[in-house]
Image 1: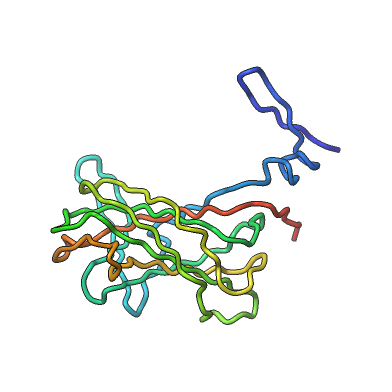
Image 2: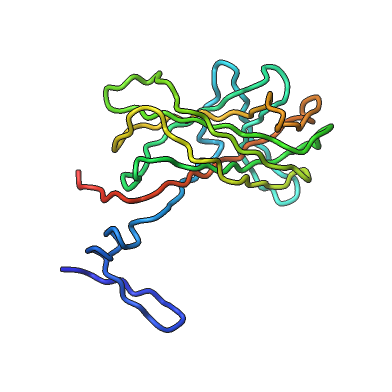
Length: 212
């Protein structure tokens, strides 16, 4: 039996099936298309080698608290943070895109641009954890004022390394591409620092999960 879901539209209430070819879980229904996954800075892991730093800050007026990853412009030039997730079973196992949420808490001595970098690898059951990442993608964004949230454009399509399968663990590595000429926010720390608040992953749904 096919159920229905009522949706309010300008012309009244429309009914759509919840299953079947045009249903929510069918190829022509709401189960297809893009979705997003939010990864906050507090869910990330600082690298033991050339790691960035993680901390928490409370803004003074309204007491807004944020976890952030601090990326400097100094030495080592490129510092890193990791996180890992299991993607939803509806994911099409293809490329993804990422946006970066960030700010500058201290005004830079010079420059206005930061360049972010991200890469990923899929690890299956009984697979090697220390697996080679896929090709990294980068995106540049521009600073204008302190303590202002900036949301980057999406990266180009990011190919996850390894063999992708349902329930695989996807390991991600993020860095500030500070050696790149496109990254020109500089100054003696904290003046050259940028704070990463989190990222947003966009992926495509076209799979129908099976019951366990």
